[in-house]
Image (cartoon, rainbow, N blue to C red; front, side, top):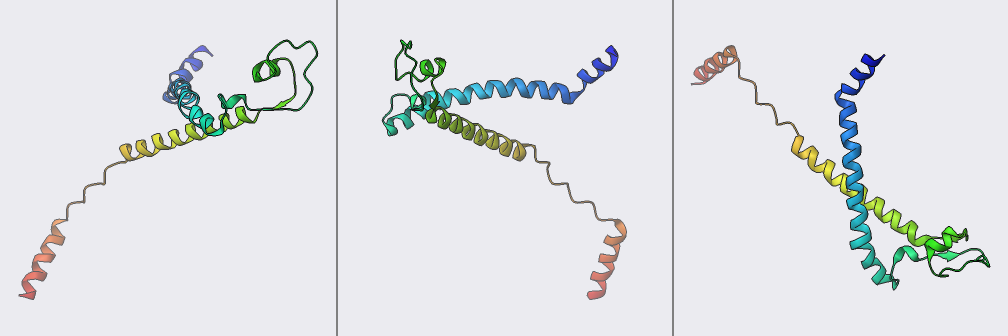
Length: 140
């Protein structure tokens, strides 16, 4: 059983998948930073909010023993207050769209880069060349 497992792990597909997962995780971190540190501040500037992820609508009452900031989304969420966190949701959608577009561009350029070269035209057989010479001499 151990030898079968070793053969399974040694396959190229499994190793490629492992590398893909690791690189994908790192790429996801880059996209999250791009969204959180570059794009969302611009969106926040346009919407008038200092932090777009903090935009929410409270749907229920705040517990009486709550001592935190009533405008802190994370603290209210931790306290169990029902909320509609549309800012966090929109941020997740923007993250997804940026990630999907980035992967699309990577695949597009990889396909162009890895596109096989057109095969060289096959050499013309000698009998065809001879027939062409005969045809040309008959035309003269």
